[in-house]
Image (cartoon, rainbow, N blue to C red; front, side):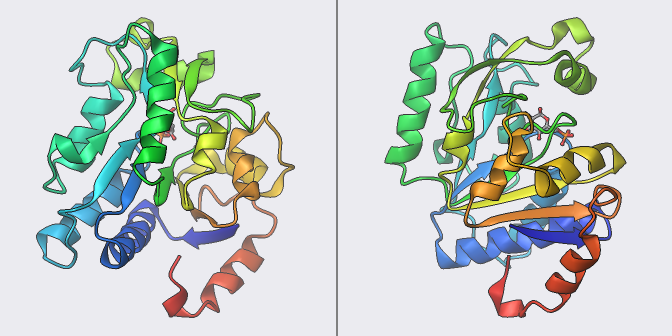
Length: 260
Ligand SMILES: N[C@@H]1[C@@H](O)[C@H](O)[C@@H](COP(=O)(O)O)O[C@@H]1O
């Protein structure tokens, strides 16, 4: 696992957008797994700016979703499908045919989950999966004690995650209890995992994920099992890392050609 400490969220966004642009230059039809929440927005803004400036061609990129609420009416502005279309797909100049995600309003949720895992495999697998981290250490919507081998499936949100996400809805009552999420086993199949965490509210979760034991109690600690995982944190989110100086020195000495 590589840990990169950046001054702030904007720098993190630019660094990761640079890695996405480099991937698209190598593989123009790369399948990019995207995350929702506030944290990755600077990544999407920086990448869209590069596309607008003509620095990278994203016209053949494919975008796939990490997780979804269950039961929101189709087209609800806070369904993750709507969010990804709004924040990622359209700003990159792509159409809905470049996008895939699980069917949160399906009648048979289990079948929709299995279909999504199959679709990801048939698409050739995710080249780079972006991740955020919940304050309880979740990735996607894999809440604490999710199996580290889990596949895409339905999960029940913790009270804390519902409260954390209530800011996107009119009230806490409107936040769905159930979600579909790529499983931890599914996420670990992506070729490169890039987690961005910013702000002091994430410092404890980051420290447990990066320096704690691999444990289902802290789903993000599963990144330790991946051969190519990058954790980008700003100074505030790095506050709990005991090895922060080592991570800084390592990154400073890294040859630029290696990228992330
Ligand atoms: N399912 C999403 C996660 O993918 C995201 O990482 C998390 C943190 O969001 P934020 O970046 O807004 O703190 O929120 C939600 O629970």
